[in-house]
Each structure stands twice: as structure tokens, then as C-alpha cells.
Length: 111
Ligand SMILES: [Zn+2]
Image 1 (spheres, rainbow, N blue to C red):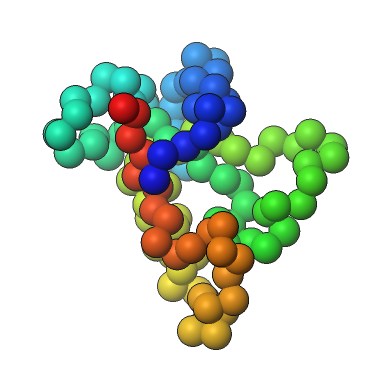
Image 2 (cartoon, rainbow, N blue to C red):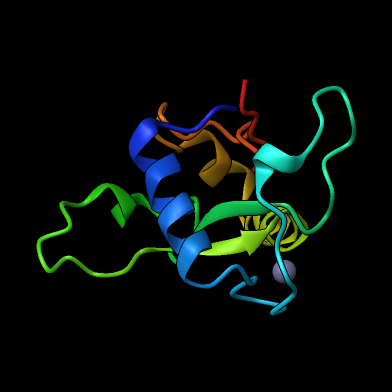
């Protein structure tokens, strides 16, 4: 899955300020330093949502300008994603909005 321009900008800004994983505090590598065709390193910087990926409320307008995204290493991002899917019942997984299919994992690729 590729990320939008604004998400990429947000990620780059966060990276400039503090290039560490929000969850495990490891030092992050910017995706532009990863080689195409090579496996992405576990500590590659990804943009992670503080709200559960499957939270319906995530698409609510962000009126208070809350911080909703943090930098996460690829490993934590993937683990969190896997965890959140595990907690869902079968019915719930079917009830996801189309814009957030469960196949969305955290992998992102810069061209
Ligand atoms: Zn981490």
C-alpha cells in the first residue's frame, strides 16, 4: 500500500523532529534509505495511527487537531495491526468500511 502525499509529509516531519519508534523507542531508518527490491528493515519509519486501524471513528473530522499519528518502526506497526485484527469477531471483520480492507498492512513503498 502506498501512502498519500500528506501522510508522507507528516511522516517526514515527524522523522525530522524525532526519528524514534513511538512504541519500542528504537532508532528509525527513513524509507528512502531502503533499497528497492530488498526486504524492508524492521526499524524502517512508518506512520502509525494512535487509534486502532479498524476503529470506525477514525474517519471522524479532526476538529481539535489532535495528534493521531506517530512514527512507528515497521515491526511495531505490523504487530499492532496483527493484534487489532485478532481481536475482531468474524462478523466485525466483514463490517469494515471499504476504505479500510483488512488486507491493508503497514507496508509502504516509495517509488
Ligand atoms: Zn518499534
